[in-house]
Length: 347
View: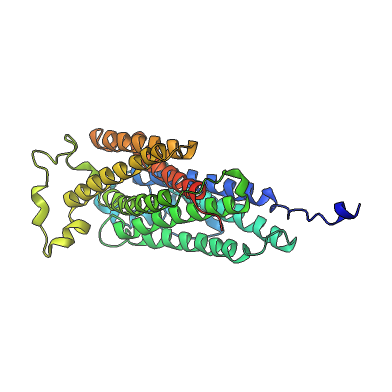
């Protein structure tokens, strides 16, 4: 009895409920990113010119209210310069996607904020996780503001949002996803069996670095509608490896941010480099005898992403491959996070 009483039992793992909750929120963010892509591709993002956090959760409920919001839209550059032909029924179609996008944002806020409050009150949050969880709540608030800040850029002068603000909006969504998944896996380390491989972690940092650059230039490409150029050839830009518009702006580096053709050129080659580094990571796992399901899925996701990118280009940014392209980009981020957890050295 004395021997048994001296045995020190291991500390219980954090409640898995927190991990499931965070992964549920991550799933909602994934859907949000897909709806965001549809909203952009259907050119619906500027249809709601008001920001009403509470009342705006409901769509117009009467003919009078529909006419009121349509009249507001008629005052925007987008309607006056591009969509002047629209009837009320046409407007309702684009309004739906922006409304759905904002509504889901509100629902994600509730799905995250209310359980966080309950877990906090019930003292279910493990030590060291309180501030990170609160930090993600503030990230969600910042994302809502960034979305409205982006929309505002398209309500003056030109009927297009700033591609820089679009990139910031998308990047915040990706950052939130990474934080949610990372925290969920930290709370439940048994979900991914650890296999420490420091060289693979170093390789993963390279994958992540090029991935981030590719996502940024992908957002620039989307924001500038640069994907509508050079739709018939890959990897060459028409008859050239380097677009002839390369020196349109001075100094030269400005072209990589403002020149539509060069922005697409940068996205293409960053994507190719990221693909090569990503697939070589999977190959390196094989070489080191550390191949796992996460590393296999990461390599497969990079293959799928390149195929989707080329398909999006050749179909002149058809909505189905374009939405799948954005969704796969987010899936790759999740797989990168899982591989970091898989191969990290646990202290």
